[in-house]
Length: 155
Image (cartoon, rainbow, N blue to C red; front, top):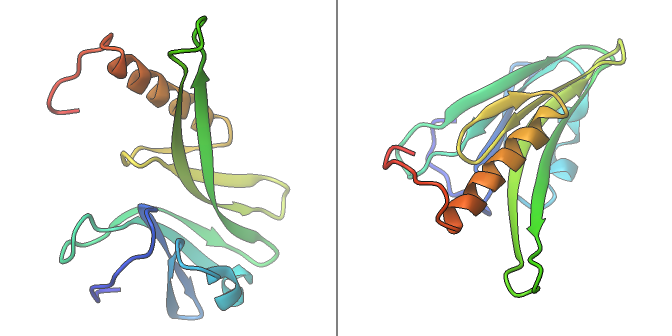
């Protein structure tokens, strides 16, 4: 994983799956990555989600990991969450969208772990929190566009 590589697409994340002492780096924007690596969905592995380096030479940032035991099913998801704002005169309609990137695991006891990362680096867990955080981010963006919220340079 130390090599400098060219990443496909715009997704800010990649996966590192460790299985049987082998490391498999997955660029989630690469075409057909699931078909190329069917072994990663077999049990007894560890899935890690990393933030891609913002520029060559910088290290990736480890965001979250999940251990997959026998009988469990790991997965990766990109969830697109949008907001549509309609105006009364239909002239100021706007649409905003944010993508949350996640890994998880369906456990043998019926529970499902879900871990999400947003493009700004925020991480959350669970199924419903991802929507609350996304809508809060989208609402803040809409307010900023309308000049209702003042932000500091640190944001």
